Amino acid sequence: MASDMGCSVSPSLISAGREILEAQITETIARKVLETVDAGLCKGKGEPVPGSMCVEAAVVYALGLPHSDDPKCVSRALRELKIRLNDSNWSSNQARAKGLRRLALIQLGTAGAIDDKEFARRVAELAIRKSVPLALRAAASIQKDAHHANALRDAALLCERDGDESSARKARAAAYAADDSAADSAASAAYAADAAAAAESAADSAADSAESAAYAARDKSLADFAEGIVQILIEMKSPGAHWLALTEQETAP
Image 1 (cartoon, helix red, strand yellow):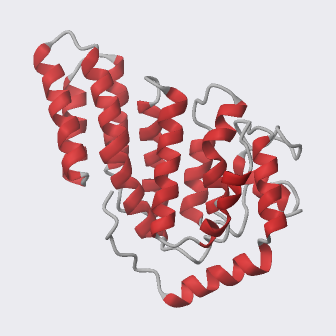
Image 2: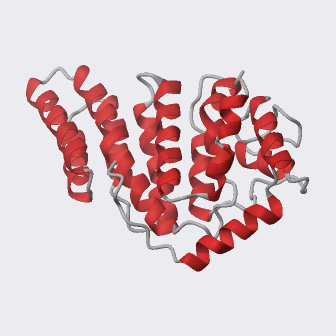
């Protein structure tokens, strides 16, 4: 991902986000979020018991609010993406927690502080450059037809190079032309990644891309994708980046 991509969020929105962070998110709360996440994260909203709730419910729990998966201090597009990542096919609740702990903290205070459409555009590009090529190469590796295998590999290179809607569409076409279930998965990922126009759908779809690629190295693929989102949020100056140092002080399970 290029580090010089501009963010159109206004200074007033950034200020509003920081005010939310200062008013609601103290170090005590941030530490409680991390402690709750480290107890393990389940698929689905779960119950208000550490180790038995999703990542967004963990934030609500740390804030001392009634059980839900809708923390108001988190950007809408980011919330949707986090739910999809949380509910992806991790190998265990502990693997899910370990992969999402940094993202759980940096999301704090993003409501009103980041531009959701710009965030979605960056996530879509991340999916096209990183997740879609993984899925395409996995599909190519089990292809019996050399022509289709080469087309999938070429599409993967194109996505890595360009990272745009056009390359995602070409990847989808190559994946649909290959006749096996792995290619179907790659096609789904490529189709998802070209939905960069709408904030929630692009973020939501990018999670599908990560999950489609993840059968090759499930937890690592998902964790790497989550860390890619962390880096996007650092570039976008998410207020929650202030708390990332806590993940270095604490030891993940």
